[in-house]
Length: 95
Image (cartoon, rainbow, N blue to C red; front, side):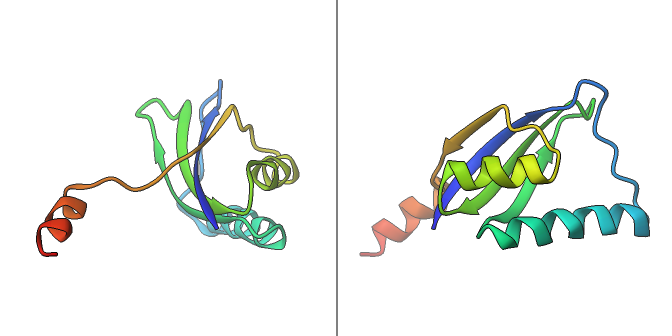
């Protein structure tokens, strides 16, 4: 399974209420994604709520595009990514 970053633009801003309605909306997205083998890992949202940067595990960019379409979400750019953090270097020193 590959990891991807999906950039999304919401011209009017993305508002997900912190309520049962918001939770149901998120669970609906997760359920639809699962049918296509797509897993939403987490997202970063800009302060103005107009852009999100979402991390996904998926079999392909096409699976993410299909899930986005079914969930009625934009998918402006999909980029394959890998983790790079300082712990990678610490682990290599231990070898």
